[in-house]
Length: 384
Ligand SMILES: Nc1ncnc2c1ncn2[C@@H]1O[C@H](COP(=O)(O)OP(=O)(O)OP(=O)(O)O)[C@@H](O)[C@H]1O
Ligand SMILES: [Mg+2]
Image (cartoon, rainbow, N blue to C red; front, side, top):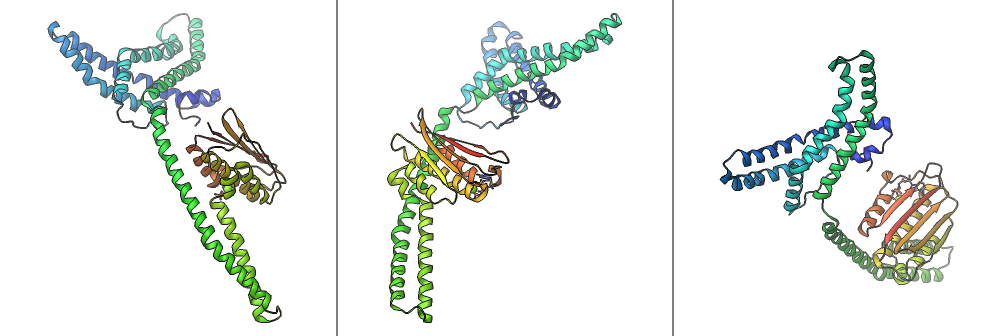
């Protein structure tokens, strides 16, 4: 997210900020206030340049005509100081009109004044030996003061430009309440997937798995009846082992699709079950005040599952710890390992997939994994 807005850029190291385009972009942004300034001039002319009797009509008409173009202009020029896309929201007219009115009445001249005071001042000081033929020494001192003030001006302009951009974004961007419905529909989608998973798990469990169990038992009985040293006995023995293997793999697959332990006994038991099957020894320390909402449990379960799978695949760790607590209405799960570190969500789909899942339950995922280790994966899921 860093460096996508002028305010972010302010946090950069001074040299990198001063060399960047941000101060210039902010100057351009603020200078663009000339346009709403002209619009104000048009409205003023429509009021002042007509006979008094007509003013009550021409004034409001001129204002109404310029409001929406000014609002659109504000939206467009925001890109100069804020590179994060601004979603279009329908029924925003009232807010846009308010923003345009604020810009026409006050903001445009404050912007121009700001550029004038912070940038023109130092530039004039720098040029003072040329502009005002004063004593040479005084002129040189004024130039030096101007040069020193220029970086200060860059910061001031970026701070004001960034603040103005943030204000415009606050008015034009969708509010949290407008986003809940989107969130809810995503949550519905995940619920639908969850139901589908359960159905597949039941189908596999009651269908394919039972058939494989029956096949395995028949082969086992046939194996007992046939002497092992005959060719048929050897082949039946092989088939029996294969069937048992297939059954084990199917059980693993079913558990991956949906964990019955999770549904029946909750997160702590399901995490212990995952830990029991991990090739790296895992200490599980999960203490919860009873059962949590199903989406929270399922999400946390997939986090532990993916984290342990990653540890087995990538970390070369010798020990792993999973902890889980509810702190102030938020489930916090941490998975640590003492392996080689260097986990990078950009290299696979597992960690980004988890982040997507977490977004639906309004949770957060953070990863700390310096090269050389250790790795800590932390998730927070509100469960109130
Ligand atoms: N615990 C860990 N220790 C060291 N490296 C890790 C760890 N977890 C993840 N990584 C690194 O981060 C990368 C991204 O992990 P991620 O889970 O997103 O993808 P993946 O495991 O490679 O593939 P996928 O999960 O999609 O099957 C991995 O490729 C691996 O290099
Ligand atoms: Mg992975």
